[in-house]
Amino acid sequence: MKKVDVKIVILLVAFFVIFSAYVFPLYQKQINEIARKDVTLLDTRLSYTQPEVIELFTDMGTEGREINRFVSGVVDMVYPIVYGLLFMALLANLTYPFSNRQVKWLRFLPLIIMLFDYSENLGVLRMLSDYPELTADQVRLNSMLTTSKWMFTLLTVTLTIVLGINRLIKRKHK
Image (tube, rainbow, N blue to C red; front, side, top):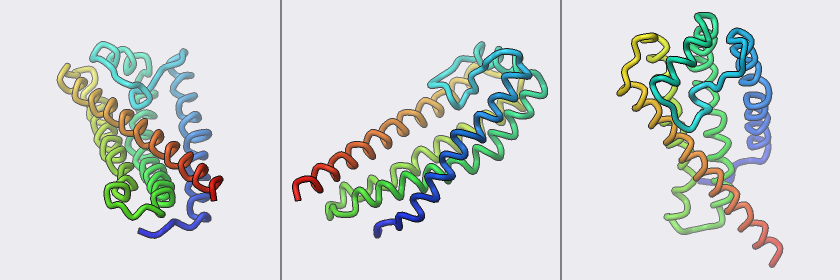
């Protein structure tokens, strides 16, 4: 895989910032106003239990759950493409000078995050449809998907930072 053009990386960063700083906060604010309190949506938590999900869905009310359904089913189906391509591009550029195959595969790590994120979104949609009849196993499985998403996100971000620092150090010594 070749290096990714900096213009593409900048475009992906712009979309990432739009989603992170504007789109998601906008819907979060709407749900908070409906709930009349600050709520933490499932995909932003590290884990959750059946009673926590039932409390959240109850607090959101029908209108808040419909907004959550739209966010999980539409907005958060596009977002993984944005952050996935962004991190793949960054990792491709940061691993470009390495010829070692063990290093080059790291650029595909964001695909694992995307897989967990899509699975989590489908699970949230299912729980929203099944509410209030949620099973403990259903919630436990989705919570594990959420935890796995965040673990691989942490790994990917850490790897990107370490490779970036490595690149800066090597440039400084040239």
